Length: 334
Image 1 (tube, rainbow, N blue to C red):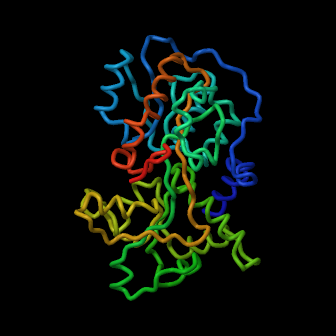
Image 2 (image 1 turned 180 degrees about the horizontal axis):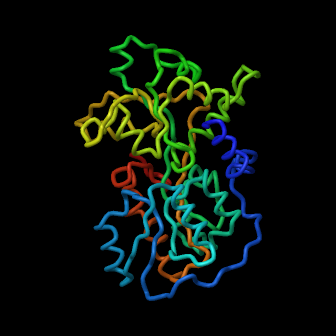
Image 3 (image 1 turned 45 degrees about the vertical axis):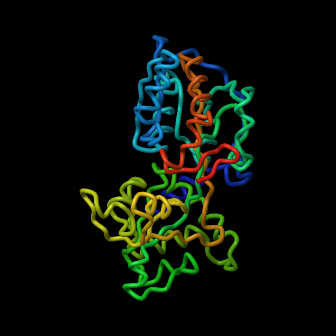
């Protein structure tokens, strides 16, 4: 089953994206009429982006007089699904949360319309790294972070397990049933890591096996596959904050998260963590998350204002603290 899912994803959603590694704007799209009435509200389609706090929304509403209504899904995959399902009658104006593994599909299906933000002086503050995967008019990056494997140091030390030096190490008996992976169907980190594994095995010394062989071997080694990052990290992973949450199982000593996730753990735990990132060469993926105006939006002016607000220094510089991700602005770090 896992091999079938991966093949389906690569052949459909990732087609074209892996060849040039950059989404394009070559598809000719017509601008759709509004799929809903413009009643002055700004409707935002997103998932639980932590940076969209009540205080942040209140500040935007108070300064602009525009009321915000959220339409939320479980993850970035849900955002894309919702846009596809309502393609001919979109119910939201602004998308927040598609990343550079999902963006190409949105572009190819004409789900976004051009924003004027590239003409805004604030656009010049966006780093070249953040603009690397995509620098067009259909989407604007708002945060970024490298996706990679995270492991529990206590498992390594307590079980006298060697730190993996190859992805193939994870198919060995000592890791049997001890790994958890968020689904690439619905999870953007899961999809990003799956993409990274394709690159990893295309560049290793073994020409007899590829990423699909590895994923099949991981399935046979009782890897845990979850609906999304939250389930993998909070419910199954033993090295993160999930061990203090309701519903925690704690049966996986390695999972997919961000290379900076151990830093986030330490930030909220008095500068201590027993989680470590495992950044094997070509096994990580720079994820960039985007915002963009939906093709079929009603409140275009409000959408443009919110993009400007999201990319302002006061808001975007706080992405590490408010969204556990890096800012996309030049000169902003932790």
